[in-house]
Each structure stands twice: as structure tokens, then as C-alpha cells.
Length: 325
Length: 254
View (tube, helix red, strand yellow):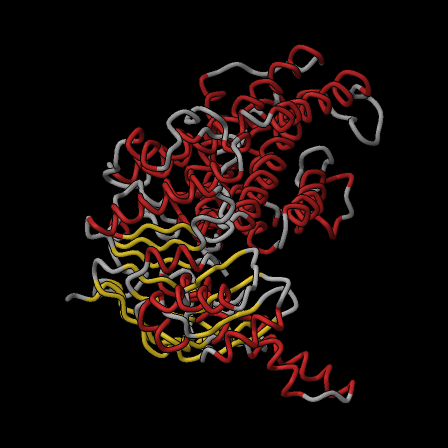
């Protein structure tokens, strides 16, 4: 399959801060590639590098060209924290950005795609935050790009709007558009992306399909039981061969497959234990994210524990339990 | 064709954005009006006495026009660049076919229209409120290229300011700091005779001087017949230099 994006050895520094540190990346044509990572991990810098809007060390090829030399009709961008002129209507903004290209998609089609037909003639500044973001997404679609860069496209959009935008992106992907997106919504990235890259401190620490990443780093599926009889339930389940952890509010049974749920329920029932709720959870991309970026949160606590003279291991264990929740 | 399409799209967006900021529209036109009213109608010129405003009223037409030709593009283009940068609009535009030169040309066109209208307003007010008389001839039409070239020049200058300043506030402060001395020390409101002799060469360094002298040759009877084409050529050359420098200065992202 042809490559839409090939990047090798990307390195970018801002004064003392290393924003990107040897990042390499390949995105095939038609693929949806999701970038995840903590704030400041380098996601936006990477998007800027790939769109040729920031200079850096390393090599980038977009459809076989340097980012600044690629045919701009083939690329669409939604930058992070982007605000277009506030006193233009949604329709005028789509027409404005469309007017910058030799040919543009019909304005009404774009407005319909992003669900803004009814609000088309309202000034941008009078739209809700979610509607504003949808206008911004629309401005990235005006030239019907082959490669779409979306830096946090659904920030501020309500759940219904987010889902309709996901459907739009899925239809674009089905039509062959290559998409590189960043997001802090793991559900979004997991649903939309063919492959995911996790950036941490400027380095791409994991790349793979969501399933591959979850299998490698997501941990086990688990059953969470909310009951007032924590200790009794834990004992019964442990005796039945389940791996059990307890928190103040619930019991977590690790490694429970769907067919074992009935057995766990039977154990509780036999022991006469009432419970308020049962929740079975598959490992997700969020678990991968927490697993791979967890060190960041442990370090300050480790320092705090040393100062307090506590055992480091027990604190890490507590946090790992917390991270799984 | 596509270049004109892009410039048109950018200019229309900029024009609508300006028209819909009512305070910006009001003060863009009110500022020169109040200057003419204060200095032309209230203070009045004193042709027989020394000091400021000692020349006939028509002598100061270049100065009044300079207020809009100088201040408006400096602050508007500079602020627009700061606003674009704050809102990541240049990052977005960098991935479109619109070039930085086209962006600046589009905004210069909008400023030309705004400043053209403001200049007409000033010209009318000076004639209406003061006893200024302007020699009417076909050459008066040469005011148009003077105003246009000066707007181009100061739009380029404004782009440089927008690049250097790190905020909209910074642009406004910088443009006022630069424009105020330029306005008074460019053979506009203060004659060369009122300045120390050593200051004369510095006046020649101000781009506004060539605008003022050229406009005066066209609008002030005692200066009529003085060659204005040389001033127009210098102004044109400087406008080209500042347009190129301004376009180059427009940021992409970092």
C-alpha cells in the first residue's frame, strides 16, 4: 500500500525543552492514525511538523514530497486551539476557506456534513463551543483533502455531536481519505483509528492497532462488584479461584472472561452475598494509555513517600489499582 | 485566476470582519475627523504668527491625510497579524494555497478602501470647516496613487510590527510609538524651519515625508508646480520594499 506519510528521526526543541525526540512514523494511504499522549507530549508539534508549519530536524515525506512542497489541494488541517474570524457566519467561513482553493466542495454539503445547516447564518462568535468546533472541522474539509490532519477535533463537542462527527470521519475514511488525528478521548481514538501511536515526552513509545496495544499493554478484563460485604465476598471469590483485589468501595476480579461471569455470580449467590452492581470491563485504550504513561504520575508520589519514610512499593501498588479504575 | 480568487476570498473575509466591528469602524473614521475639527476648526491656523499651525490651512492637508494613511494600516495590519497568530490562523493558512504575499495584498486592498474613504472624508471636512482652498486640476487625481502607495507601504510596515510584537497590545503600543513621531516629523504639521538644522536629514529618512511633499505639491497653492513625481517614485519604491519585507515577515506558526 502507498504511504501517505513517512517521517524519520524527527527532533524538535524549544529552548531546553525537547518536544520531539527521534520520532519515526508511517501512515498508509486510506489509514486513520490516532496520536495519543499526555499534554505536552509532542502531539501538536508532530502535527505541525507533518504539515510543514514548524521547522525541525529529520525527514518527512507527504505523498512523496516535503510537507511545504506537497500539493495543498490534497491536505486539510484543523489546528489545535484554532479560531477563525469571529464575526463571520458559519456559511461565510466555509465559503472563505473554500475560496482559497481552486475548487471547493459545495458549502451546503460541508454544512450538512458537520451538522450546521440550521446554524449556517449565525456568526461564529454566537455559536456554542461545540458548534464552533464543528465549523472548524468544516474548514478542514472544504478542499475534499486526501490527507486530513485533525488536532483534537472533538474538543468541546457534546456527545451527540461527537458521534455524528465520528460517523463523518468514518465515512471519509471509507472513501479513502487518510486521517491523522490527535485526541484525549481514548474512546474516540479506539473507535476511529486503524493504528494508534502513543507519544510520551517527545518519543513514540508504542505504535500498533488498538487491539495490538490493548493485548500488549491493556491488562486483563475485569469484573467490578459493588457490595457492602467486601471481605466476605473477596474470601468467597478467592476460594473459588478468582484473582481478587479490593478497594474501599468495591471488589475487582481480574482476568474474568465473559463465560466466567456466571460462575462469579453463582459464588456470590451461594455465599449469600448481596451486591449493588456488577460491571464487567474489557481492557481499553485508556488502560494502555494509563499503563504506558503511568510513570509520570508515580514519580512525585515516590518522592513524597521517601520524604514520609513510607514504603515505595506499597504506594506504587495502590496507584496501579487506582489507575485501573 | 486562482490567485485573484484567493485574494478575493481573503479580502472579503477581512472586509466583513472589519465592518462588523462597529467600534473599530466608528473610531477609524472618528479619529481623523476629530483631528480636523480640533486643529482645523477650533484651534485654527494663524498665518501671521509663529509657532505651530502658522501656515495657511491647506498646508496641513498632507498632515491630516497622514493620520489615516499612517496610523490605520500600522495598527490594523499589526493587530490582525497578532490576532491571526493567537488564533492559529496562520498555521491553518500555511496549508492552503494562499501565500503570505497574497494575504498581505488582500489586507492591503481592504485598508486601501477604508483609508480611501477616510481620506475623502478628511478632504471634504478640511474644505468645509477651514478656509483651505485647493487648486483644482487634472493633477489632483494623482492624490490617489499617493494614498494607495502610502497605504501599501504602511501595511508592509504594520506586518513587520505584527511579526515583532508578541501581542495585540504590543502592536498598538509599538505602532503609536512609531507613528506619532513620524506624523509630526515628516514635513507634515511641523515645517523644516521649526526644527533644528541637524534634524533636516532625519526628516528625509521618513517615508511619510515623500507622501507629505507630494500631496502638498498637489493640494497647496504655494507649492503647486513643485515636482511631485520624484516623491511618488520614492514612495513607490519604498512601498515595494515594505510590501516584500512585510510579506516575508508574516509568520507561519512558530
